[in-house]
Length: 451
Image 1 (tube, rainbow, N blue to C red):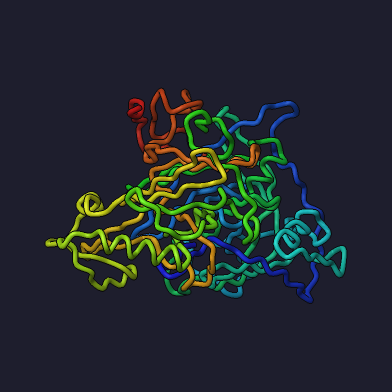
Image 2 (tube, rainbow, N blue to C red; image 1 turned 90 degrees about the horizontal axis):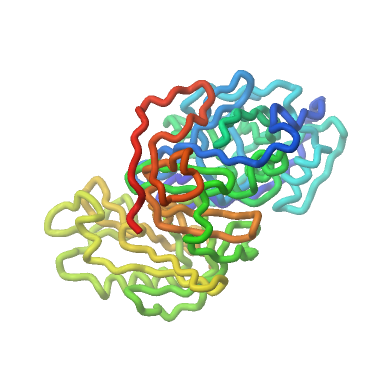
């Protein structure tokens, strides 16, 4: 839900609201059509769409309901709740790509359900039901000042797994009927948000509870646009990725590899260790005031005279060259690599080359995609956003309590015949995860990546 350069959108603050209206809500079935007893957990891989610039988000298509209908969801590892704009009826909704989701009464999750308790208690620690028949109401607020007021429902999600089986588990998600998100006149790129945090209400945790996939999620965001998202660990390169233990963030339960020291061009910038979280719901990367200013000073002090600082409404800090830049490749030689060194893991370094912190705007200027988070209310929190995670497979392994990353060709979805590693190459597309959709591209395979 990246709304613009000034605000990270992925981080959510959940606010429980107890509405006067109570609705009769039968306890919804949890199972749907799930895996058979004794079946092994599998994985699912989904194509991603979008980019950092100019669209400002990456999203996935999910098939929800019976019969399944497609919906575009903003991929967000910075929040737990998945939600769709819906006609319940809608009080305030944006224009969305697909018809609004319409829940039926028997899909409502009652307030006394354990999933409602998890939703309410996960971030606020408060859960109260005035009646056994009361529905599960919520309000979720994001760091970009957007919000969604809604009710928790369950419905089936149609997923095709790597083992070729099709499952349709009944999963809980939000039916948002009152949104304050962006412009109400512009068509939104998505129908809602796919919450992939580590809380029990996230889709990832629910799939684990159903025995469908392991509690592992990862994404690979291509600088060319698109990429892929996966649930489960079949394609995780455990032996070759860089790993850091998950740290308990002081800013709620976000994915954090712990504190990091900041380097530019191989030298430390002399700032105190930074609390870092990874968030696919933020288009750009955000540093708190001290490291941000230290980095900006280091960049400006190292630039050649070929670049001149210019105003550009796309981002706060931009430069132009002797002629307009066509891509970051035209200007990357003028900038040095940023490094985050995580003390929470053995030799856990994240190298951030210029192409992972610069964009080239439509005006041909190069702009810094690392922003001052203190100006947007993040205080001392530092967010690694989409721009920095591009062309890397980033893995959030809740089973082993670790976060990993490795350079990868994110515009190539892993071949389902060689799903256990990178060594044997890639094919596009892999297998259709959108039930009822046909692949429009013929299969094209690629040789293994350079070792």
